[in-house]
Length: 158
Length: 448
Image 1 (cartoon, rainbow over the protein chains, first blue to last red):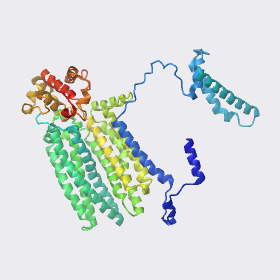
Image 2: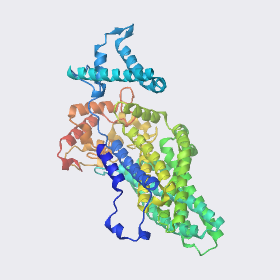
Image 3: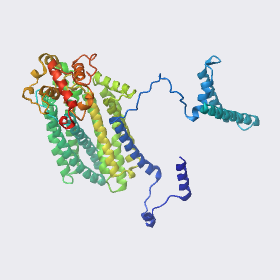
């Protein structure tokens, strides 16, 4: 992605290059077509052909996906999720089996959903009219961020 | 059983018939659909007195003439040869049953070809109204070939009440006769459009090229709007066991076990869907960017989807040639108890004349294999025995063959896809010995 970004930025900066033999041509002989929609549609046709080729290979020469998953098998020892789920994973680990009469993990999921909902509601809550509300929204974000970092580190090291 | 066996190494006879048929269907459907295309387009050209359209039609009809009379007329008789060698009992059944219909189809074919020659060679030589009449005449004759042969083809999957009545009209106007007629007609419209895209993409005048490409692309619309409805009508009339085979295949896909039928049906759906998108984004939305090469690739996709769909239809018929009447290996369902009682070799007319040809020396086992298995299984190659047998020894092969002898579906899980194995114990034992020897042989010897 960074390379693609760099490429697009350079195209914007320098413009498209024109091959020398095209440069030499008089203006009336230079042919061009619009990227959108002409070239995109042409490209799309090739994608469809390649998709068909892929479908043929998949259907006629299928390749197994390896050992079948067993949802009842115990998790491998020391397994950890991707870094962006580590904080939640760690938080769920430390929850007791039951909180306020709700199953611990369900309570955790409810809490995550509420935090997510909180972020969604910030633009409606902090409309810019009250400095107190703006500060509250900012502190909500800061606390969640710090907790996220702390739990991620905790999950990483344990 | 009443004929010698034609041995085609690696590929098997089924695929010889299959390859010829797929090419033939692709061309013969064009011969009918393209006839409709020519008639309707010439009608438009006549009404508008459009000279550019007339010029285009002349070019297109030359292409049509070459494709249909050369490829179509070669592959058609090719199928007759291949089916009479590959599936003589099935061919015998169809000829005996449909003598008159098949003769009529041949007459229609014999009239179709000269009509088109007259149509092509009378451009600018006869009046335009008369030439247009020729186009409609050709269209009428080519439709006759469809409605006649369709009764014979559909009979094989859905013989319907013919199984009890043995009345020829019951067999011809069988449960899938009408839906299949309409479905094929829609496919023919689509293929006519796809072929016309080839010739349209070569028109020099850009404005007219754009017009003709869009016009031809629209010929794919009927199959995509009406195809699902007619397709449902067709599937509602095929045998329940075949429907169950489809659903078993689809359910099994969920756990990663793709049956060949499910895979082929998925592929047919994917390719059909992408063809619609292709026709829309290519010749319809972007006719200027639709080159001759792209048109050829598009036609290749059409060939693939036709082939794959016909393959799916053939797979639905497993394990029969004529559903519920004759098995794929030519054995009649009603003969099963008799053959089991009398023994296979006392029923196989050609078996006593046979001698071992593979050097193994087990002629009896080899004949059992040839007559009962080889219509679907090559020794090595397509559905090859060497691969299917794996590491089984003679005893476990024998055990497997015992399962295949059962006619009760509860005891034989293969009963829906394979004919039952027939014969006395010693004949089955000879087959087991023969199969074991295939597994043990070095590649070249068993590859014959």
